[in-house]
Length: 253
Image 1 (tube, one colour):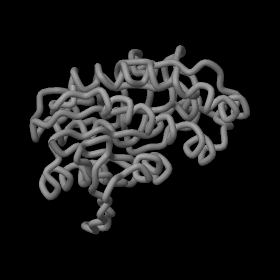
Image 2 (cartoon, rainbow, N blue to C red; image 1 turned 120 degrees about the vertical axis):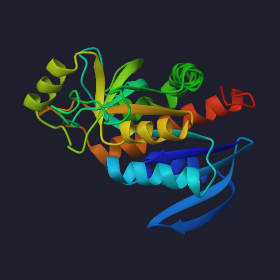
Image 3 (tube, rainbow, N blue to C red; image 1 turned 180 degrees about the vertical axis):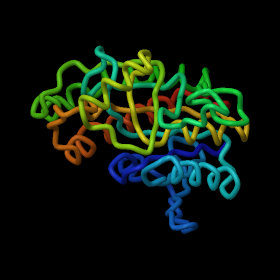
Image 4 (cartoon, helix red, strand yellow; image 1 turned 120 degrees about the horizontal axis):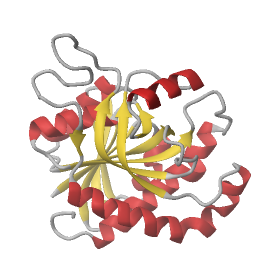
C-alpha cells in the first residue's frame, strides 16, 4: 500500500522528508512529490500549498498519478472550542467546509450532489493516529520542553472531533465567535482538510487529518508562527506519524 502524506507548509513535513529512505523527487503540476520508504512503508510526500482548491488538486494527483491508497494530511490549525489550547493535537473525526453556501438550492455547508455537509474521516486510521498522538506527546514532552516553555505552552493534549475548513484565514475574535455560534461542536479551523475529505469520499479512499493548534484563531494570536511550526508542530507531527507507522498492520489501521 502506498501512503500519501500531505502538508501545506514545508516545515510541516520537513522531519518526515528527512527520514525517507531512497527518496526520489518528481515534479508535476507545479508540485514536488517525493517518493521513498518510511518505517518500512512505501510513501509519497507532497506540499499541497494553502487552500481548498490546492489541497483538492494535490489529493487528486496523489490518487491518479501516484497510486495513493490512503492519505494523511498533517499541519496546523486555529483552535475554536474553549477546551482546545495552543500546542494541542487534533485528530479530525468529521470535516466540513464552513464557507460553502449553495442555499437556497442546498442547505448551508452541504456539498451539492453529495447529500452531506460533514465528511467522516476513516475510523480505524483515525483511531490509530489518536492513540499514536497520545503516546507521542508523552514521549516527546522532554525533547520539546524548552520550546514549549519558551512559547508559553503547557501540557498539550489530544482532541478528536469536527474540524472545519475554508478559504479564509480566521484571525479575529469576531470571526472565531461567529464560527463557534454556527458550528458549536467544531474543535478547530484550517484551510485544506475538508477539501481532501471530499476528494477521498468521491474516490472511496481512506484518509485522516492530523492538526496541531498553533493559535486560537483570534486577535490574541501572539506565538511566533514559523518558530512554532519548526520547533513544535513539525517535530510532533513527525513523531506521531512514525509512532503510528511502526505499529500499523498491513492495512495501516
